[in-house]
Image (cartoon, rainbow over all chains, first blue to last red; front, top):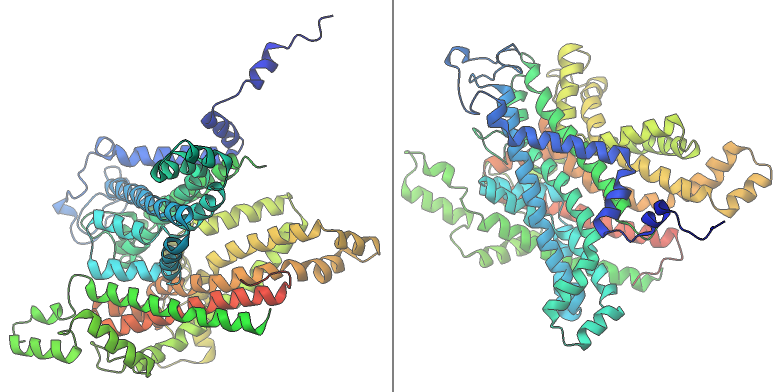
Length: 295
Length: 317
């Protein structure tokens, strides 16, 4: 008759969980997002371990297969290109470029966006006006042509390309972080931190920004997908990563010339971009729900 | 919306456009490399000739001075002379503009014609198999790279089936209405792909929102047929917020034209952009970027204004 004893299971569920554990629990409810995460990890591992998976170097040529692309066969699973290079190997190495450019450019964009948004939202006044004017100007130039212009004129190396994509992709993040800061800076915990003598730098980076981390994570995730897509579009048009370094975009560019005689060149790189983008978008969707504690 | 706030907003776009032109001019002129590099490798071009060209193009002056000269000429309707062809920039662009307008205009209409019914269907049968299917398709549509869809379409419909031409605006020596139309099918569909996926989601979300409101229940209670309730009462109001999304996405169509026109050898300004990039044709690049930015600013402005006109509750700051 001891009805007041709380069952162990119930007690466990009432224990306060860590923030990340709670986010993970909520993220797991989205089956598509979990599948997306698994797909992304598998693709990333395939690219990362390309040297272990493929017996060929990405620029190794088989002299006997020069001239025209060869069809898929037992040695070359996806055939070879016109220079006798193994397509499967180039696809894996292309993934290295696509993933690293996507990830690094997204981090650059988020770092710039968070800094600009934080400073504008925290200090307000003329600092805010100036920073938001710059943001507005950059947001009013069509993004793809702008990146194409810069990348086409500079003819960048891969690190420069990362900087270009990141430097032109921070604006929406800045707006989101700014609006978070505008409301968070008025809250009591900021006032009390200020009252005990915290410097502005401490207030911005240690007190306010951690509270704006949820939208920042979602924005960064979506920026990864966006950057991968932009890199592949640039490389496809011949203004991004330049051969012989393979990227999914420039593999498709090369495949274009052989579309009628060697269509097998054009299918795998596009499928990889598609799978990656689908995975990233599903993850972003799941994260958005998992991080939104207001519902 | 008052006339005063309209004018204030309109005047506000002037510094914005000036700022855009400064950013674009700086990027174009400060990027390493020069349009003369192309000639510098040519042994037949002497150092003096190169210097003459530099002066003729105005590239010998400091960049700020070049900008002021460009701006003044631009405001007077002189967009400069193409480095590649020697034609006035405005002439080069106007020559190519109609092809792009036909392409993106058709894509715009096609997107609307397909996205609205799909969105309505998905919203009225929420969580049905059909709705789930559309959700998946639109998610794929947002994730799939446009240039790959373009290549695959060429492969299937032009190379394997031979139903449609692989590219170009018309067959040489033909050029009838039907001929141009068959050339348009693939590029228009590819260009509409992403917008259809995006817009149908917005229509769905917006309609679901409206269906839950009281006046819809009233219309139902009054004994209206479900069809009338949806199309007469709900869809009308659900489409209002879509207007802004659609206006803002005009730019997406313009950007998409760069890729689509390249794949399908469509003779519009998107391909002109890529061609001008190869030759570092600064005046043409500047003109094209200004036109597309201007379109974007105008679309943003129109979206703001339309929203305020449509929904009187919205107050313009």
